[in-house]
Image (cartoon, rainbow, N blue to C red; front, side, top):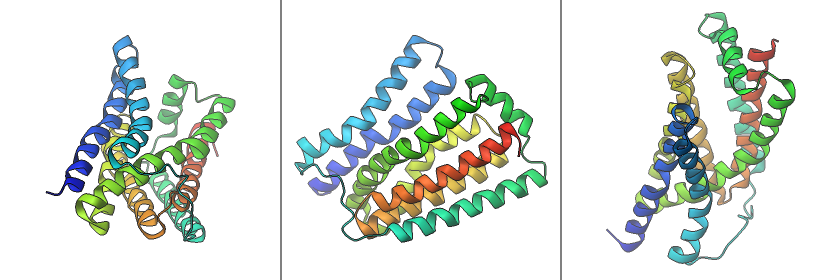
Length: 229
């Protein structure tokens, strides 16, 4: 194994599990001081490690990932296509009785998201900031490390699997296994699409456009479930 591949593997082992650990802390130990500390520490770790690694291991320049090759139109089209699938899957699941809005509303009440102002605030945060941070972590850092380790096409699949892992925990904690499995497949497809966008355009911004559209669609569905259509 070359030094570059070895460094990529170490970086992945240091970062990828952190999000799953944070997710477990959030759902099962968030009421304990230890759980809160580990959750916050993992979040800081995921944001800071890529920059520290770039500076001291890769020794590369900091960059805002300029979209020199474009890709915004493709990103928007992919985002709208995935959003359409989300709306269709929601309609089918609701028709088949696989989703129970009252249960979703009860879970929202436990976190305060049954208040419209809190829900809108969360949606704005998730669409504008969280999706950007996920592109920075999972595409700019994690995908590039998988690319260095496995190559471009295999890196797309591996990065999508890594991105899906903590979402499986999130979904399994809130939905039955059928919905969790279907949604996890959707997350994997999204992760693969956004990694491919980075592979093709070498910038996080086309993926961010796509990601933001998809997250907006998810919050629209959430609104219908919690507040009624």
